Image (cartoon, rainbow, N blue to C red):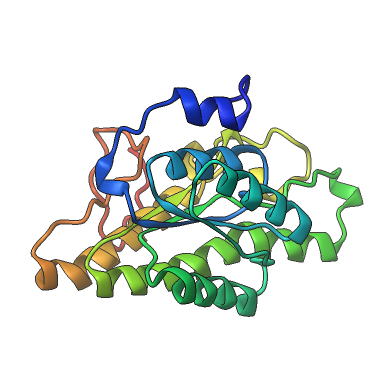
Length: 228
């Protein structure tokens, strides 16, 4: 994807997952970069894709680009550091498509500053965008998915989850044992949804995030999924 334009990618990469066709995916931070690549790939599978970032012009341009390829795409610019914007993102998605089958939490504020140059405004925004926003969006999606009896929530992280690779960067601080806190948060969400939905639809829900070591036990509510 990095060395080909979207049109070439769409023409040369075949769809592989027919079960995704017609499903609905919200991809946050998808007007460019990794998020745009994810949205394009899901669109290639025939999914209806919601394009999101804080910049309305970039969202509109990416949405137009995907529509030109035949992808059913919806433009919803929103700042996911604000709860009312998250609610609007889901409301517009439901109004247009009637469901949310996949949420990809990809958006993040990646500005980097030295420790003594960090101001509280930037700190507050990064905590809101990188931690609170994905958490609240996951809550909204999980409730819808529980009612639907299906759905997936995907969190995008990076090497910043295992080590502090930039001085003073809050989101890059390692968790105990070298794991980013996103892992136990993901697993605790999955287990909560499983407990609520298993009796309703009779189907198991995975409590293991991608990349969790096989020897790690599936998490309960107390263990926080910390690897041994």
